[in-house]
Picture (cartoon, rainbow over the protein chains, first blue to last red):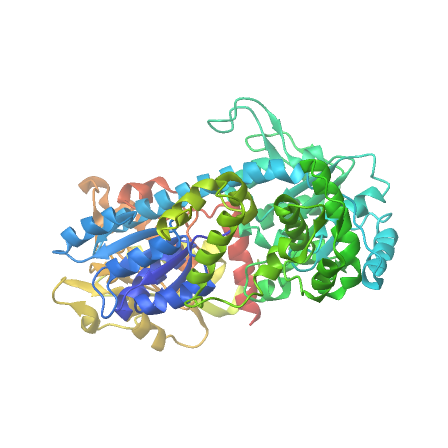
Length: 447
Length: 186
């Protein structure tokens, strides 16, 4: 489970330390900043769920920081910390989007309730996102393709390991196609008539994870109106794919280890042991060795999962596959959109071959999807791909991340005639987030 | 888990903590953590940690001083005090621990709340044992647990302390055993 990331901003060291220590014991991930400027620097590298900000600080005030933070990321919850006598400023902060304020020193109960409320709100949002993503995932499966030496080696290895019953750990950067490799292993195994059950451990909120994996009995909790089978049970006779395994919390690691050891588990609220016969394939883009060292991943679980390991290469190491993959994606998206686009121009292919594709196959897929949407003719030209737009010389004042974002949103809006739904899809954000950003950056449609 | 002969968990009173409470804690800790316990005086003067404005004692400062005095062969040290404790950001704390560290502290001051005079001693001792287990759990790297019956559950009120059991939930127990194995190995 992803921990709640909290940034404490206070110019008094003792306050930062005592609040940080308390929240750490509560299981949150804490970073500390001694002022507004340092907080903004830290926020360039890390996205936080909650900011706890002292109102009165040397240099940039808490209120000024709040305004900048809310402008950049309206979704982050900011709690103002105030001393007695600054309540009017706190009320002003609430008007500027602060989630709440706390009068220091605060009662442990008060802080606990507030953090719990924020965490619950975040979990609800994550749950909604998970349910939406789950729907999308179903439509995104297709076979692995490629002709490069690197991918052919992977195909051979898949052929070799597929018939075995051993657990497989797939590693590789985000977007390299670990999910497709897992599916390919299943397809080439003796279990291919059985189900392929996939679960994204990084996307699923912890409170849903248990019931998703193990299922539940009617009456186990308020919403359990009837019995529900979990993925472990549904994977019987087939393969269970645990994607982003590096993201699961300690408790789930303990539960999974037990299931992998004896293949017996209980539904939530159930008393009858359930046996299920499935093969496990896990995947991660994290450095698990490091996670074991810092104690966030159990070594015994790692050895259970890492019986056979397979590293999927990044797209930059199999560039020969770019044209073939691009053609495959073009075919799919033209079918889906009913657009009469015939091919990708040679110049576009050349540009694509020179690009490093940090987001790997998924970035290429998204790029082609967008190109199909914006392409006006029958051939995809270099300017139809967003990656090459980034290479244009920045205009005056374009240097900061904020300016880049503002400019990028404006470009996408202009190119797509301010069609909010389409632009939100291209930018891969919610429509409501896009509206907030339009408002925050004061973007206006030019006539 | 086998008893480890060389190491002990030290229970150290600061001020006048009744002997039977210390003995009850020592026995419960020995039983649950399967490590030898000893009751010994260590740090005595904690006036340096007194905050005149708040009329409370800064627990973090006491822990730092306590850590300096930890004798050899001591795996963990738990101090028991009668005075009211605080950390700067909070109005009060029942206790504090160095997360994954050596020292922790528990105060009886607020644990005496809402006790009926007839049952004050056994109830206070039970509360003390629970808080001692909880803070010791932190020194083994355990975090707060969502299970309200688990000893690692964070108690917002004295009612929560009474409600939770003296046991670690299944998950916290496994993590405690892991930490114990690791610490005893090094």
